Image (tube, rainbow, N blue to C red):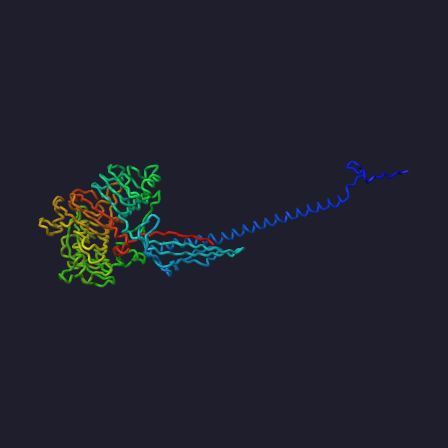
Length: 595
């Protein structure tokens, strides 16, 4: 007989095979299983959603970059072309001119906006920061807006906005501006009061002492030696921001601690290229060819050539002895008071050039009274071989020139002669005047010393002749250019002379050899013997002399003057600048925004 074992409800235990769990445990387990499955499913959904979101974010970033990168790149293209157009025109472009800048093309990206425009009117202001702080400038604020659209998917759009300022800075606000290596090695004590800026290296090493009363900036290096590496051992003192003069004492670009020590010693007023010094480039198409500004106009000149050449701004051009107005019409050069022409012809021998210079002399006093005197104060002087662009010379046979030159070979067929100009009787100017020439220029006697006017002389080379020039017999009167120039140096005795003008001229590169330096930039061919030569203005050497290219260092050429040279602070006022003052430029980005 089979018996049935009964499990007592109150005796169920874990070891009891009859045990079946507490009441309701079956439902709890099932619920837990369901919850676990739900959690797993929910987690899977979250993970899937996160992954989808990340993919979407990545896609949006990619789409945003597809729009932003072209917008940013196109804005830089527009800024670059704005600068280039400004150089080509010699000024900030009009909005219509800016609208001609072509936008770049991108694959699958559309530029909905590509514009640059003047943001308000031009401002005359004093620069408050940057390398040229303190200089007066004409500021043109501008904006650049570029919007790029990418079709996607997903579609996106980006806008880049640039705000900036185009600063046009007159070069005569520098005491000294040099294109090539600048050598400053005076024998006598010399003081330089204005800013000194070199577009290459600067070498400062006087025999006695040279003092700088403002900034000393080079785009290259600054050395307390001669270019050949040797030292004269003189003292160099440079003013710091507090007005205290700190000695150079051998501290220059060759020192390992130069950057820190120069900033510390002169408070940032002395800078080489390694510590913020940069080039000061003219606002012309090709800043590497600044000589273009003094060259004569030619039929083949491009629009950008015409913008750069002062020839096209001149209200009077005296070319091959004849006067022409800005429209190319002949004008009279006769002074109605004396009945004499302001133009005459002479010859002098230049011992540095070792050539006879065929001189067209311009009497400034007579010129200012003549009908030809230009209202805009810009006079261009040119002497050339007659050709399709240049007229024949008056007098003599065709191509030879005036009778005063008949005994000499023409400069285009012989190396013993050269054309040049001489300005005389210029002690009093009636108004602002800039005299410009592609040829060498001589300034005879005091210039612009009575009721000083804004004045400038720009030429292939500038040589200063004293008030006693040409006095052969010593009676105080002018006798002859040629006879006087042929005297021995000891008999060509200079007298005190003053020039109040900016001088922009050429130089002669002699490699590591001393080429005369800043102290001989305005050339001399007399025995000054410590006689004072006073210059008040600005000095710039921006090109190599093409015609007066005789090298420095020949004997019997000159004896050094006592140089009393100062920067004319009147040039810091834009209203006091000479006509046709060349400009350098500075572009400053004041704001950049991406949206």
